[in-house]
Image 1 (tube, rainbow, N blue to C red):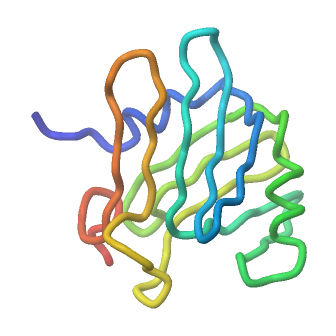
Image 2: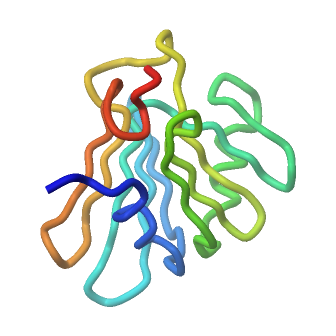
Length: 133
């Protein structure tokens, strides 16, 4: 069965970001929406954050604070496409993963899991929305 871009990521729409966990060399975004689904987006490549129109890369001062400012905000839209990578929009900002080849740190870019059903997604360079890497 072929994977349809944005089919799993779009399930985050309406969920609220309730936790940002900084773990050594990656970040986990945890969402809540229902009592059953507790999705987690693990970013093995650190995302770019946009907050109130200002963009922050992981190497810039203010990046972690911008990411924390998204806590308690609902997901309003998601995008998964070549040239964009994956992007999650919130009320006042967004998180986007579209690394350069130099920013790749391992075989995976990100993972999304934690829905009641066992469906999950792993994004890798050269596949799906990242065929341009």
